[in-house]
Image 1 (cartoon, rainbow over the protein chains, first blue to last red):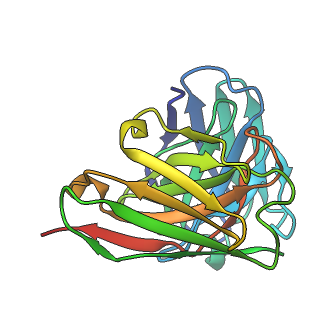
Image 2 (cartoon, rainbow over the protein chains, first blue to last red):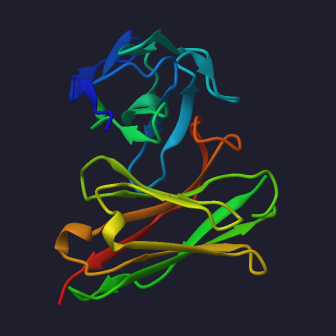
Length: 106
Length: 122
């Protein structure tokens, strides 16, 4: 079982801030790593796949990097629509998710 | 593009069986060789992948749940289903059906249903 650990679990940021979220895997998952955004009452939305590939329609202020066991999601300039919870997910060995990072308004 | 819609009871009694169906529209469940999945989210908590079924009926379940799960597919109705037996309050969650981007177990989920809340309570 591959365990995914995100940090921080929550953060407060202002509009225009650069935000970085980290995800660590308990074993190497190569580049089989995705990031999702979830808002209350809705299903998760795919943002990034294969660690750094931007899903169609996702703004370019979102970017992903990393490989192996350490990955990051960066929002270059936080916008009002970005306040949400973000999850990483590995899919090297079936699918497991991180516990989430809630991005709140400072 | 395809759409997924979960349906089923919102309340299940403890020790009973939770039964949900996912209906696929604007596309065929039989095309593409996808692994149609169930995922759940406990209240205010993270996401847990439950298992998948292919249109041929091949399944793989999360080892933590596999003794209580059965999934089935009905290609004539373009539906797949989840049965989770011997439920407890710990099974209270929002249940999603979802599909990966490609016909592979090495892919992220780009298609999700809206989710259905299931409460286990007497």
